[in-house]
Image 1 (tube, rainbow, N blue to C red):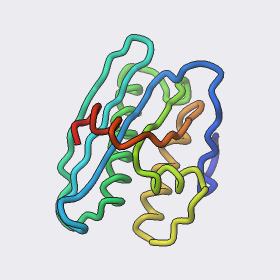
Image 2: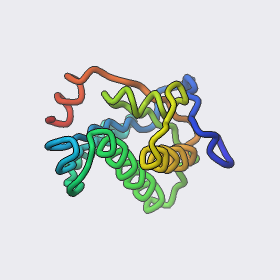
Image 3: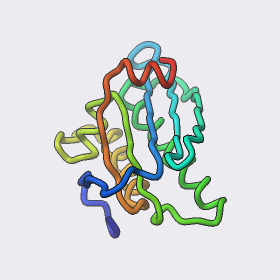
Image 4: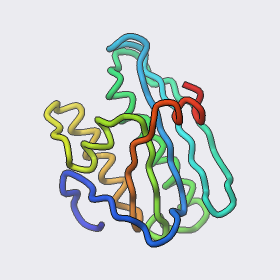
Length: 150
C-alpha cells in the first residue's frame, strides 16, 4: 500500500489481530447543520483507549462529518505513533464505522461523485496508505452508540 492513492483502498485480511482499532462516527444537527463527531482509538496489545469528541462547525452534512471525523482520527493516531518515535508503516489498523457510504467509497465499491466528498475520500486514502495493512469494516449503529455515545 505505498505510492499514489488509487481511488480506493483494498482491505486485506490480516494474518494477526490489528495493532490498532479506530472506531468513528459523525453527524450533523440538521443536514446541513452543526457538525459533530467522535472517535475511539484502541491499542489492541494492552486495550488502552483514547476517546475524543469533536465539534466541527456549521454547514456540515452527515456524510461530510463522517469523513472529517475519520480524517481527524487518522491524523491523531499518526501523530501519536510518530511522537513515540515509531512509524505508521510498522502497524496494522482496523477501521470501524456505521457509515456504509464512507466505508464503501474508501473500498472502491461505491462511486464518489461530489467534489467535496471526493477530496475527503482522497485525504483518507492518503492517511490510510501510511499503515502496513488496513481493514475497513462496517458495524451496526448500536455498536457505534455503545462505544462513542451517539
